[in-house]
Length: 459
Length: 102
Image 1 (cartoon, rainbow over the protein chains, first blue to last red):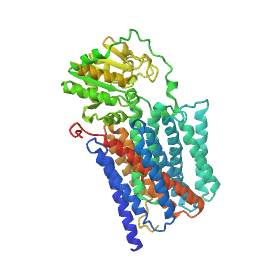
Image 2 (cartoon, each protein chain N blue to C red):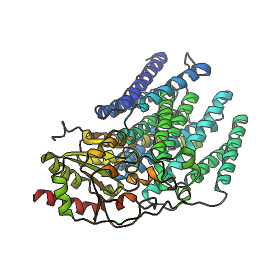
Image 3 (tube, each protein chain N blue to C red):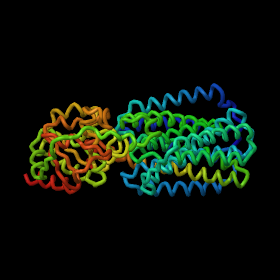
Image 4 (cartoon, each protein chain N blue to C red):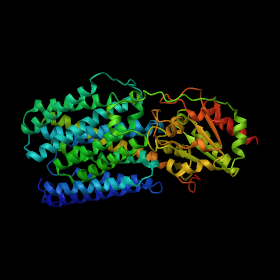
């Protein structure tokens, strides 16, 4: 086959791959078609990877195959094994790998000493910078969520240190662009960029990590697009840019759902913003036992269940679904109400419920369900706390004031399954627990769900 | 590379602009329940970086370039394969009450 035909096949395949990526991503945007979407995108990836072996003027094929095999097998096994609750950190890990790969492309291009011209020099350096930050930053995020490194390190002058490293990296980057043949400068540039990713991410708390992971996802996309320009590879340019834009928007949506601005997430820790204690809550928490709750729910018309990350930690979602099925069989209208940040990231709770077998058409977003609480007989809260705290609506002195919440306090009866009497993740007392219509069902989420199942069954 | 059309200057900007809008539009109308799978799915799609890393390694001449290229391909393959596996696992669980009989 002649060289021209070869490049034609490669170009056509990349074109097809770009179409498949966009089509696949589009299909992933609806629960009905989402499962097919990833398969379409996967076909595009496979096609693009296979034709790349035909690329003219390449060598090192053995190294290439070994690297693909190693990386692919390790990722395959870890991806298959990971528990659904640990999904966020695996996304961080794989995203970091992508950022690292983009930085590696930049490094090979720069170390090769080829004269790329000013535009491509700038793009190679920018892509390498963003990719390296995404690589080391994502690894820190992974380590934090995985529990390898729980401590959130903060010290005075941290922002100034980050700024100094950022400026240093940019200056080194400019020097690399101006004098492309200095290997040591390139090394210093990459070391600084990697250091920046670490120092940027270390002070950010675990609760904000999803926003940060999403941000680094967008970063990697952008880095891939820049390196795509350098290598004149349209598939990389288009896929990278689409992800860069989609990821940026997703990051904003997540930050908004958490009632934080992106700048707030990056430049201040959550602990620091919680300085005001909020007003004192008066009244008392009134306990109830499972038998009474079982009766209450079995004879209700409408029950809304509000699950939180605590439910997932207690592995109670299967029992909760079993309970739901019993209630549905008794013609009770049961719906799940999901706060945007339930779980560890937006949509994570839906995944956890789906894993337990809950069909997505009885799972509702906050906006869809909030008007229904007034007509609900029972709101059952399991493992959620701050997202149902009415002080977010009423008390301007509270740190969570202004955060959108689920209107559980409008329901006729509120049942809270909770381990003990402690405050929520943010350390704020929950006024909902002290309302007249609220009863506390103390105990482990899974055990209490089992007791409720028994209570409903025995009726 | 003997390509007929160079992707630079305004052609590059046009591609960048249009692809950016596509990404924005795709995510804009998506319900929050799919945000995590979508983040994972877009994470998979930038796994296309594998292709670039393969070309970089394929053209690497010195041991240093080969080493970095090897690491790049390793990381890119991890991104693509890992991204696919976790996304597929997550989306596999999205079933409606009509087809959950299994």
